[in-house]
Length: 264
Image (cartoon, one colour):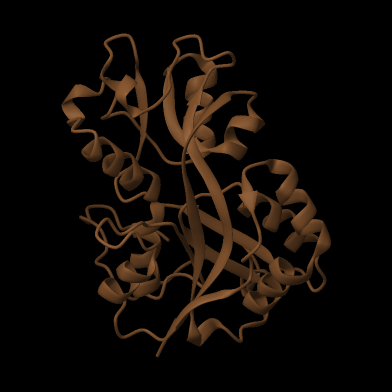
C-alpha cells in the first residue's frame, strides 16, 4: 500500500490499490487470527504449516477486546478471548452479547489455563499476591488496555482496594505473556500477570491467581471455511497438538474444541 506524498492518510473502509508481496494462492491459504495472545497459537501455527494442503496462521495480538472488534469489522476468521464479566463471573459470553449482538457465531473453547504473577526463580522478594504490589520495592509490568489479562489485573486490584496509582509500573505495558515474562526474567520488572506456560518457558516461578477460560470466536460465515475446519479438527482430534500443549504447563484441555455458546 502506497500513501501518496502530502496525504494525511487513508480513511477506514476506503478502496485503494495494493501491491501483493505474496501470491494469491498463499493469501487464500492464510487463516487470520486477531485477539488475545496465548502460547498455544505457536503450537497451532507449527502444526498447520506442516498440514497438507498448507494452512498458514497469521496472528495479531491486540487483546481480547481488540479481537472482538476485529470480528465485528469482519477483519479476521477467528479471535481469541478470555474476558471475565465482573457481575456474573462468566467468561466471554456477556461481552459477545453486548458487542456482537447481531452476529451469528460459535464460541469454541481452546483451553482452560492458569494465570498468575510471574516472579524470578526463588521469588527473592517474597511476592505472594496482589497485596504486595503496594510495596515500594516492587515494580510491576502490565498488559495493554483491552487485554483480558489487564481486565483480570484491574479486577483483582479493585477487590483489594488498590488504586492503579499505588502500583509502581502500572502504566508500563506489554502485548504478550512472553514479553511480560521476558521483562521479569531480565530484571526490568519484579512481577507481572501472565500464564504458567510463559513462566515455564523462561524458568520463572509462578504465584497462582486464577483459572480462566480461553475461547475462540468463530463467525458462522467462516465456520465452513476449509482453513477454519482444519484448525477445529486439529484441536479436537490431533494427538500431537494435545501432547505438545500439555507439556507447556498450566493448560486443561478437557473442553478443548467444545462449543460453549452459539448465537444466530
